[in-house]
Image 1 (cartoon, rainbow, N blue to C red):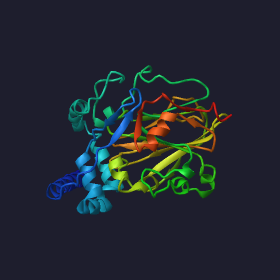
Image 2 (spheres, helix red, strand yellow):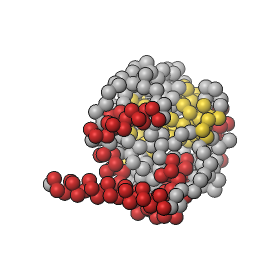
Image 3 (cartoon, one colour):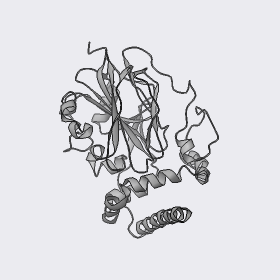
Image 4 (cartoon, rainbow, N blue to C red):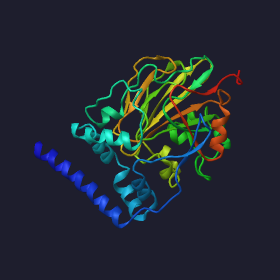
Length: 326
C-alpha cells in the first residue's frame, strides 16, 4: 500500500515537472489583463491572477490546449492537487500566498492553519460580513466578482456569440423553461477570496442535485477562449423557494484544482446569510438564477456587466431587491 501511494505521489510530481518544462519551451501568448470595477469607489482595477502564466498557456497555446484536453480538465489532476493541499507540508505556502496577494486576514476566526486547505476554507468572524437583513433585499452569496444579466434571453454570455444555455446547465429541459427569460447572476471566486458560500435569500431548500462534468478553469482568461465552460464543469444546485422571490436556483460550479464542493447546511428552511457550504482549493463559481420579474438587480452591476467588466462584491452586501417586481 505504501509503495502504491509513493508511486502515485511521484507520478503526480513528475507530471507537474513535465508541464513546467513544456511551458518553459512553449511560453503563453500575451493577453489583455483582467479588469473589474471596485464597487465602493467605482474605479476600474486590474486583477492580480494566481497562476496567470499557467492559465494563459493552457487556453492560448496549442501545446497547452492539448495538455488541457488530456489532463488539466480531468478530476484526477484536480483531486490529486486538492489532496496535496490537505497535507501538513502545504502550510508553508500559506503566508507567502497571503503576502503576495495582500489578503486581509483581520476578519478570519483563526490565524494559524494546519494545511493550505485549512486556510483556504477559513471561517470568518460573525461580524466580518454584515448581512443586509431587509426582507426584500437579495445579498451576495460570496466574496468575489459578479456578472449580472436581467434577462438571459436578451443577453450574450461573456463572449459575443455564446448564449447561456439554461437547459444544459441544469441538465433539465423542463425546469429550464422557468428560467429561460429570467435573471442570471454569476459570482467568480478567485483563489485569493474567502471560499465559503451563503444563501442570498431566505426560504425552503430542496436537496442538492449533482451533475458530473469536467474541471476547466472559470477564470476570465479561460472563459475568453472557451465560454461554454459553465455547462461543461462539474456542478450541483438546489432550489430556494421564497414567497417573495419565487424558486431561486443556487448552483456551485467546480473548476481546475478545486478539491471538492462541500455542502455544510443540512436543514430544509434557510435564512439569508447562513452558510450553505464551501469550496476546497481552487477558483470556483456560484451561479444564481431567478424567474422572470422576480428580482430588480442593482443598476451598477448591470451597467458594469454591459461594459464587459465584473464588479467586486462581498458576501452579505445588497445586489438587488424585489421592490419593483411586486
